[in-house]
Length: 429
Ligand code: UD1
Image (cartoon, rainbow, N blue to C red; front, side):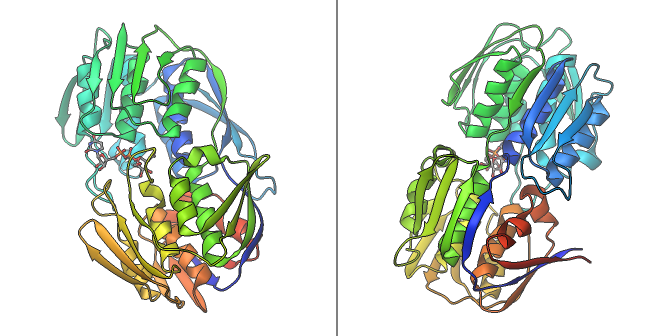
């Protein structure tokens, strides 16, 4: 298994191109199931999760051709996917695939909408919590689906087609919103989704669906109105920039010092996270085609924050913020309200010398600590990149094992950091 070796202590200086958002590319790729015509997606990041999803979609009968960047090429523009689901040849998504990536469960809604049936494995356990799918099923049942759970599979049927309905989500869920939205676009009549997630990636999916002929109103708000249509057409859409990658590199620069232009991204995508980042010591200046980030004079400052659905502070930036807060003079608190077990990086940061106390969903970080290099283990995607940030500021050598977690969601991470002066390399093995 590959490891990453970092020699800490170098400031970051230069330009980092931001890739297309993983969390938008996944539902957009799945949306190809909804049409027999070609969906062309530009700026698709080259990531393990995206590659796995294309294997799952091929199994359903989606033809994929790819142009643009290839592994080993120097350009940073994402790949272009041409996805055509002329015929759905198989409406089953098997356990060995769905269990490897939760987002693949989102094929359920579009398969049901287009074919009137689907058999999709329950996703199973996950390192950051139980992550149930009750909200997905509740929404699809409201649209008239008959749903049974059998041998670990969701068996869903709607022989006469789905029917529009009012769905009030009792809790905000990104995945359930994607899943039910994709089902509703082909349902008969009007669907209203209330308390829908408002993440920019949902807006990106809805915008693309509208280009394909769907009729969705209320994009960017928590109430989506969908007038069902009988079929969707082909379209071309560019995946929006990755706000989590943007925030991650911004915090890396605030931790190490230096000055970096984050290219091909936009400050608007960060919404309220921006206030926390500024408070934490990231100096951010929007520029044509990107944003410039620097460590604020005086270095990082302590913050108190809780994770919330968009537009609140994203859980996907929580681990990175914690690494940054080890550099802040004083006490910070981070409350994780979205996932119950998303603190596995704490033990690893402690191996580097961080002073962090955990009490249920609350982490208290005392700084400033001079971290010292050590061997650590990545436990999930965002946790692993927090260890990279910690490694960049730690004295001496840090090696991170299980870096396949990083490859799921960060494109060319070492290369992007190395180009800005970091001493970071991948050790194959
Ligand atoms: C998505 C993102 C992930 C991000 C998360 C929260 C992708 C591919 N993944 O994950 O990076 O961390 O949003 O912003 O976009 N819940 C239920 N029942 C359900 C569904 C969810 O109780 O049926 C709970 C979850 O356990 C969790 C909360 O709702 O506590 C939010 O989860 P959700 O927004 O659904 O996360 P994902 O879509 O899995």
